Image 1 (tube, rainbow, N blue to C red):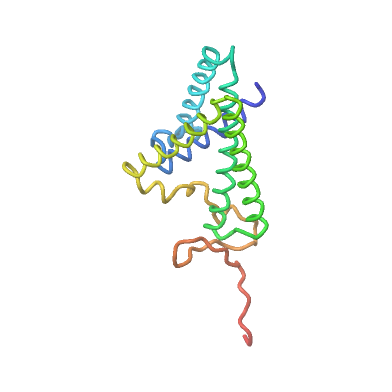
Image 2 (image 1 turned 180 degrees about the vertical axis):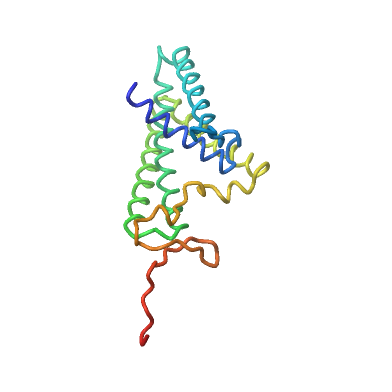
Length: 199
């Protein structure tokens, strides 16, 4: 647990930082330390939320963790399923999708959706309503947050993922440069175009 926390804190704080930059979360999360250039606000909020979550678990779920475990299982399955779908859409948007990435993303998304359906049905059959409730809570939270953003910051929904978009500096040296096409999609163009026939 101790070894995993720094990794979770890094990933979690980066997620909060990206959401703050893109406007899908409070803008304060995008602040970085003026000298160290670290996302101190996002790190602080992630730390506070982690301790609050741990305290709630110890008070409510430590004796009977079935409901909590079911919620965590569902949340993880939903997260990975949505990640597979979003990665596929992201790669298509930046023009770096390939047949094998499409196959892998669809396979993971289908597996996740199937597993999620199994967990819900199995939970209902065995009277473990924590899992179906967890699905409803997670799904409702996402829908509510999208509705809030559509009302308060509609532009953030169209630019989601822009912070982690690949740039020319992220590519392997000599592989080319990224330019925007007519619809604003980044396209990889060779840094050394071939001469036209007859030149």
